[in-house]
Length: 486
Ligand code: BES
Ligand code: MN
Ligand code: ZN
Image (cartoon, rainbow, N blue to C red; front, side, top):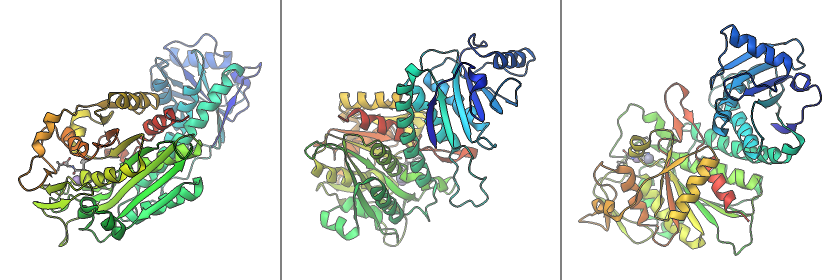
């Protein structure tokens, strides 16, 4: 997509050169400054009872007299917050994506100064509205004809808006890369496939990519990760991808993504209903790839390392059994009381591996617990960290990226349930506070790190009719990494 800023000439929006025009209306009245033919149309539609200036409502008109653009749409944007604006953009874009429009101009009427956040929101909305999963669906509708999208602004606003458009485009591409990866079914998106994707990303963006196989992981003593992998015929992979945007001696940000390409639960098998959605259990891994794409695309002056332990969690004659004890790379032993709590088993070895990079901070991202969905629903990602400053940075990045998180506690008392008579710890306790307990488990492997954990079980995908990956938390992570750049 070609994103631009566009300054309206003397003729205003009505004379704008574009084949489609989307006007976002702030507030609940027809904005005073809006050009005559557009304002008249809007006022008439409201008066006739066919349109309401309520957030989310849209109105489409074709070949409006006095307007140069063939197609015109209005989208009511409520209070004018960037969040409301972005929602209205997505709704408005929905009216154009299937039609004949190639260039779309987007204007905001009735508001204040436009800046980077608005540009970023528009590019993000375009990425969201135009993405469609096609890989295994030949009958999917054809791709949108839209090729260019501009945000109408003043000369004074143009520089900031352009910067936002560029950042937004990189984030949107990263988000859609994550969505595409996660949407692919488990028989396509295997650990081998994820490693290929990482290698491809490396070629495209000059990343150093290393892929460890089962033997390499054995040598490193990753007994916990390999215990999950052992039940599957799909070979496991341990992916390390590095973006070097800053000096060699600059401590890197490390992102660790859970890459379970399918989670059956293993011997502690899951119920059949809805199990297909466990193909999304590599959403954390996908978000690490997406963030690497966005950060490298923007050539951010920061060192970023993505680590992805990836395998399937399957029941088989070779699978781990409840009661089995394994030795993690850290040397700590783990009694596996439930083979369905596998995410923490692959992440703990990746956290230990991360130590070798002497990272500035480590953030792991995982579709880790159903309990997190119970606690926070599908709007906010669960955030855990013993480090207040780091937690604050991540929360702020989530707000900036319109990809919000919410912090949950990590008091030591919660961890008492992980006691085992047969190992240094068990991999599960009771059901109560399950998201916190999972984070407490990981905390035991992060003692030497400045660490935070994001539980994206509720935010990585949508269920129901709109079933599909969201690409979250790529916007949060990208903002976080950019905020740490020089
Ligand atoms: N991948 C699941 C978590 C999950 C479940 C995410 C449902 C989204 C929706 C994870 O591996 C898992 O199975 N967790 C268990 C942990 C339990 C056994 C302590 C869970 O949440 O039930
Ligand atoms: Mn599981
Ligand atoms: Zn899982």
